[in-house]
Length: 297
Image 1 (tube, helix red, strand yellow):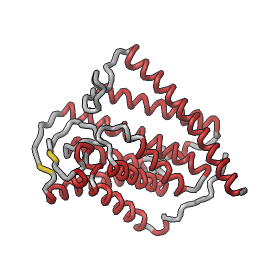
Image 2 (cartoon, rainbow, N blue to C red):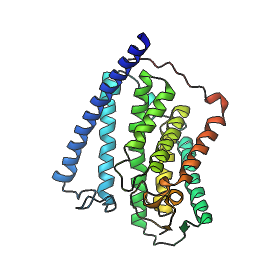
Image 3 (cartoon, rainbow, N blue to C red):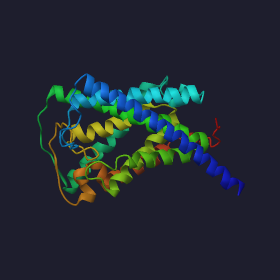
Image 4 (cartoon, rainbow, N blue to C red):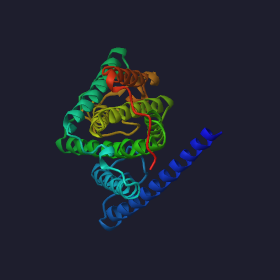
C-alpha cells in the first residue's frame, strides 16, 4: 500500500508540474503568435482552410522559432528558477555536440534512404525528378533544423528529464515517446502504424539523448528523418506535404508504402526504427546500464 501510495503521489506531482509547464508554454505561444501575426502582420502559417498541406514556409519558420524561444523561457522558469536544477541536464551544452549531431543525422538519413530503396524494390514507389528551387530548398532546410530542435528540446530536454525526476530513466524514455507519438495524432492521414513508428522514433531519440547526455544527437536524427523523407524523397512528412526535389508517387498497399501519411505510415519504418534502436542499444554494452534512481526535487 505504501509503495502504491508513493507511486500515485509521484504521478500526481508530475502531472501538476506538466500542467503548469504546459499552461505557461501555451500562454507564451499565444503572446508570441499575437506579436507575429497581429502586430507584425505576418501571414498565418497555414492557409485560410487551415489545411496542413497549404503552408507558408516563411511564417512557419518564424512561428517555430517563436515556439523554441517560448520553450526555452518556460524551461528556464520551471527547471532553473523553480526546481533550481542545471541546464546541463537539458543537453544543450555538449563538447561533442557536432559529432553527436552528425551521428544522429547519419542514422536518420540512412534509415529513410534504406526505406526508399526498399520501396522501389517492392514496387510501391516510383522515381520522378522534380524541380530544384534554391530558395525553397534553403527555407525548408531551415525549417527542418528549427522544428525538430523545438520538439527535442520539449520532449527530450524537458519532458523526459522531468519524468525521470520521479520515475526510472526507462520509464521517462517510454512516457516521453508515447506523448511524442500522440501529439502527431491530429495530423492528416494519421494511422496506427504512424503512431507506432513515431513512438519508436521517440524511443530511439530518447535513448540517444540519455546515452550521450546531449540534445544534439536526437536533434540530428529528427532533422534528417524529416528532411530526407519530405524534401529529398518527396513523401509526406507525418501527413504534411513539403517542397520536394523528387516528386515521387507511392501506391498500395498503404501498410507498405505509408500512403498519404508518408514513410512513417509504413511497416518498413517500424522495422528500421526497431532495428536501429536495438543496434545502438547493444553496440556499446557499457552504455546500456542506466541509472534508475532519480532524485526528487
